[in-house]
Image (cartoon, rainbow, N blue to C red; front, side, top):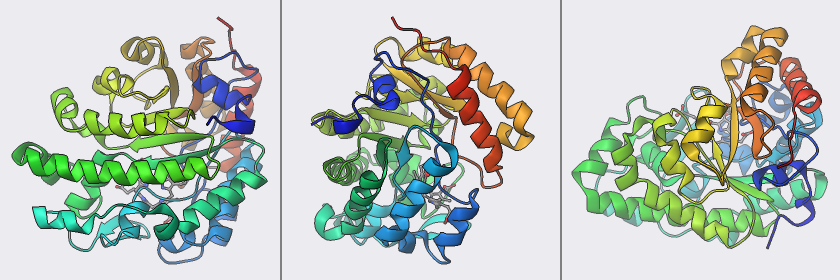
Length: 349
Ligand code: 1CP
């Protein structure tokens, strides 16, 4: 399989480091609270209800493409959907994020993580992908949470700053840790394969919280599992993006996990990230989302600095260094898209 009718899109070609017309751009969390049209269809209550409603979820997926003219859409869903769907007992609380009823603490909790059957357990995800792809004229990015980041919610019971219990399990009971990571890798693989089958033209593996780990912890406890997920999706032929926050010291290892594209947060300039990741991988990033709050001129200047640090390299997808902040002005983001499209250079090698 390949990215099908989107093989010639700027986004897919940039992921593959092939010559293309303009620097592609999309934003993590481009759908969401910063958009008035999102707030008007989102409804109240758990986001899981909106995700389970394919009509609403497909509409929310399309909104940022209409609004910003970005080069890719991202599926409206959440990283905890597979764990929720197999009955682990996780909800997403408005204003907080994922919250787990009984956190993962002992071997017996593995039984609460049976394999995911995407058709039976998450038919709404497949339906949302199908509907969105039918309506879109840019590629749709499917996604999953990487095993470590999903594990951090299941073990901590909710959002956490230090991820201390998760790290303690990782180093204190390695056997159980690897079994937990295996189960979560299986969930991610099943979910990603189903999304690609339904029409996603690329996938992103979100390891948002991997930056709390030392290089050695990452090597022993995390990298093999993320690599297994990425490798399993490799058979589909769609580009794979591997993203984390605060991962400056892990970029070399993340680049070795098999993805075509490595996501870079705002802490590491694109040129130094390229040296750390090495040749053969495209990069995605890395405008600081906070700069968007500083207004149009500051945001556009910072976007130009990101473009300058990339210096025309064809293996580059413009994005934020993390997700759009809820208070962002959509007009500023729209201007950033224009600047990237008008001023970004793509030098053919
Ligand atoms: O309406 C709401 O309830 C608002 C918040 C929200 C949204 C818009 C949550 C709760 N999830 C989502 C959708 C979502 N989540 C998307 C699709 C939208 C898009 O990107 O345009 C995606 C890709 C995610 C992925 C996700 N969920 C990640 C990885 C990306 C990242 O930002 O690092 C993570 C860590 C989550 C967990 C999560 N879900 C929601 C919140 C507030 C959080 C973070 C909580 C925390 O700080 O730990």
